[in-house]
Image (cartoon, rainbow, N blue to C red; front, side):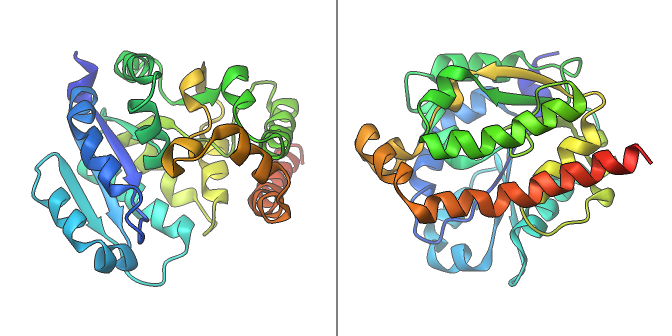
Amino acid sequence: MNAHLSSAIVMPMHDPTGLYFPHLIAIMPLLKQCFARALISIPPGTRQQQAAWVECCRADDFFQVLDLDAGLAVGDEFVQLYAHAAATCAPETLLHLCFIDRVAFALQSDYRARFMADLQAVTTADAPLIFLRSAAAWATHPRNYAAIEGMLIAVTEGYFRKTLDPAWCHLVAPAGQLQAILPQVQHHDLRICTELVLLLQATIQTKEVDWLAWEDPFLLGRDAAQLRLEREQSVAETQKRLGYVLPMLQLIHESRAATQR
């Protein structure tokens, strides 16, 4: 079966400033070559401030737009979108859970051909699957990003004897399998990404890719070396990453401890 006919891309669209919507529309023809449909979620702030872009998506049958309620935590926004996608797609549909910034960069850079080939090559035999940042991809990121998230990956590898990314950028799972595990997700923040990995870790596969290189310089129109240095020297950037990685580490430790009781 053509993978394109049995896969969908699933992306939260938190974009009150309108940074990402122009990229989404620009890459839409390429997305249609890789996926049968796109499911996106729109929080109220984005819906109000970027109404024209949102209506542009609604006008195209390729998009299925989920309007989110106000006041949801980020993890709950993700879970509502993922649950909606799982419930409205056939159980065998491969759902590509990912993020517009990474996808926009991959499709508008020298990584385009490899990215599209990798997506189109995924079959049900490969899923669930995490696309991992390769050594080359990590080398493009600020060192504090790589050190902090690398610690998370190393701890997970030590516990489960396989390289996983609990703060993944791109995860593929069949709709039926995702629908079955989502009721077990308990947290309301970015730990939901880690929970999905823990729930799938027994069967999840991985593939290292270069196209998960650092996307910010492209999206912000900045010199990569200069921006990397700024981020490496930024206390706020380091604290931001510790803010989600440390709770993820604790969750992984608790999960491992529970299995050994």
